[in-house]
Image 1: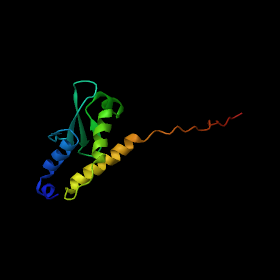
Image 2: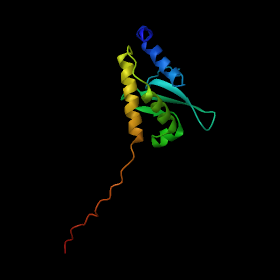
Image 3: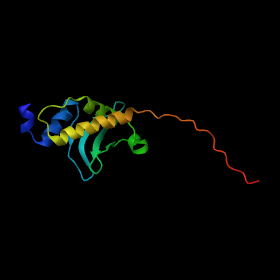
Image 4: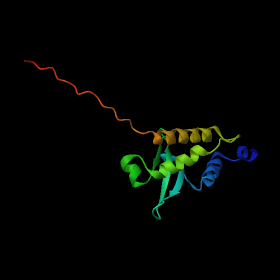
Amino acid sequence: MEEMTQMTQREQIAAIAAQIGSSLMPDNDQWVNRFTVRSHTSDATYVVAQRRGDSSWGCSCWAWRRARKCKHLADILGRLARLETQLGMDAAIVAMLTSARTAHLDLDVKAIKVKSAPRLRPLDI
């Protein structure tokens, strides 16, 4: 635990990436906490990251860009959500893990189909 307090925030996030079998990429203008994830069906590598502006999560794969849902994002967020909060972690890292848990829960929500009664138009006769 003392080791975590002596590490920089970036080093702590890199250690988290290693714990979930990923690697950490440098932040850019729009995205932070960028993790790599390998495709299960091909040799492709995708990037799952947190948007700097609103802290939402996204993936570089075609499915997320088109439908805003993908298995890569679900995989990384699920792994982050299962990590225990360790004492001595930076507040920003705890916030990132909390955000991942929330986003992962949001991915699991199934849409509810609601039947509504047909609307009748008043007729002017």
